[in-house]
Every structure is written in C-alpha cells, then in structure tokens.
Length: 197
Image 1 (tube, rainbow, N blue to C red):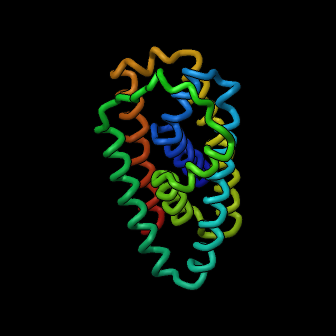
Image 2 (image 1 turned 120 degrees about the horizontal axis):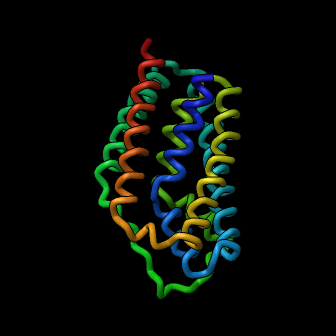
C-alpha cells in the first residue's frame, strides 16, 4: 500500500507542478477554452506515457542484470528529485500568460512536446529507476502515471478556462509550489530510505 501511495504521490507532483506543457495548456485554456485544448492534453498524455513505457522497458532489461547500477541510479534519482523539490519550493510563482496567442494547439503538438520536454524525461527516468524493481511494479507505475497525468493536465486546462485570475496571484502559486516541492522532497527521502534499509 505504501508503494502505491508513493507511486501516486510521485506521479501527481511531477504531473501537476508547472512545466512547459502545463503552461501551454493554461495559455490555451485561457485563450481557446477547455474543449479546444483537450486534443493537446490528450496528445501530451499519450506522448508522455509512450516515453515512460519505452524508458521503462529499456531500464527494466538493464536493471535485471545490474543491481549495483539500480542502487546507484535510485540514489542519484532520489538526490535529483530532492533538487527538483527544492527548485519548485524556491520558484517565483509566476506563470507567464500570453493573451495575444490565439492558436489552438493540436494533438500531435502535445505528443511531440513531451518528447522535447526535459521535465518529461527527468520524470520518466527518475520514476522508472525508483519503481521498476519488478515487472508488476513497473506496469502498475505506468498505469497509475497515465491516469494521474491525464487528470493533472485536464486540471490545468480547466483552471485556464475557469479561474485564470487565480494564476496571476503570485502567493497562490508560491503556496502550491511550496506544498508540492516539500512533498517531493519527503517522497524522495522515503524512497531512498526504503532502498537502503
């Protein structure tokens, strides 16, 4: 049960915290509405999930043969997740919204953007290194991440359409960043502790 909660927490924090894809979704939600943004959201979710699957299958083959590599990768991933949490906590809380941009983003743009998104690669590699101790864990993680990613991106699209004025208030984003960054650090420490002990 604790592993399931760790997978859900990791997926939620990495999906819902502001990043390049989330900013495009908010921007489109504000300018085009949720319905027109949904194709981009779907493309981004499917693109990320495919990236996660391919990294997971590749890592799984390597990790079965090299347990020292797995332990080292888990340690380095935990440190990197702590660093990401720190950066999230100390971010400015500003999301730049360009109200002049009226272009509706397409499915294929969301799909491709995830493959060019450093945050997506970091989330995939870190998550796979932490949760791929067995095939069942890996596939469970991918399944959980797919749904949480989809819901998180839908959330950003909805926020963009319905309550965009809240995103312009810096203290609200700072609070969200502090909570999410702190949870990410706690999760990384917990996962590292489980691997060592």
